[in-house]
Image (cartoon, rainbow, N blue to C red; front, side, top):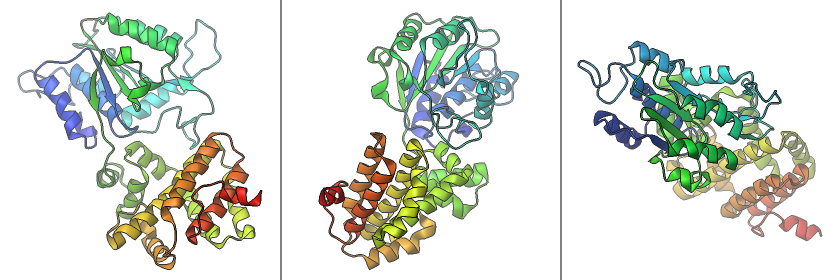
Length: 397
């Protein structure tokens, strides 16, 4: 039902009009930042398409009723005419066997319970862990052939349509994309295929040209904060901090809320900035050592938290007490920092952190990159920045 979609009234309105006027396209592409709503809207749209009462006397025109047998099955993702496909890492199995990971069904069950749930293999290698997958996660030709193309050729068993939802359509291998294209070129009369993607530019133009596109925008922090309180039972004060760390994504907000490591890493990010200010190697080294042990992907996420602290400093200097800080629970510390360091080059600090993230992405030595970052931040905080990360190394050389 549309009530499960957070915000996004413009996008939802487009889909409600299609349902109300019975002008449903054969293929859609719901695109926008991960966790902003494309996947949740795809599930709600699919439920409405399969609802037995929609468009009939006493039933809704543009939404699922939520109570008929078809709606209850679709909500649990067990309707025989609804198929959801997540990209997953390659598993070594025999060629004639289903190669989906053992926890695939459990991920779908969690998705049914909460359409914004962090269940993607790319972000979460293990369902009950915080770390991303260390394997390539993508849609491959064989799963699309044996699952998607096979199931999308069926006639409806119980509903009016056969509905397929392919998440992360921007992570389809080239040979798999050609397989998907064949399905789009010859769609069945009752088939509705919904693709979701974060990066439209990574979807083949030949696929884009066959889709009706619906855009989803990042969610405002206030919307995420309200949903965290009303939907997930997060305490209001904590919800405000989480919402501003979520970067427009309710999925990211749920990850932060459920992850002790994120909270620990946020504290470590603040400690790093404070120790960097001192410029003392004996104080910086222990923090760098802890951060360097996180692993490449986690270090990049941790640097995002450092960047959020810098962002707060920039906003606090520009807007004073009216600044919409991410780390609202540390507002006093942020404002004291800005007041105590009037010469700090905050713009340079933001650039330096971004360069450090790029260096980690390029497999730079984590300890060296983070140590260099600390000295570069020190200089920026004292108003003598060279404006780039490698300046301290250049001087040392």
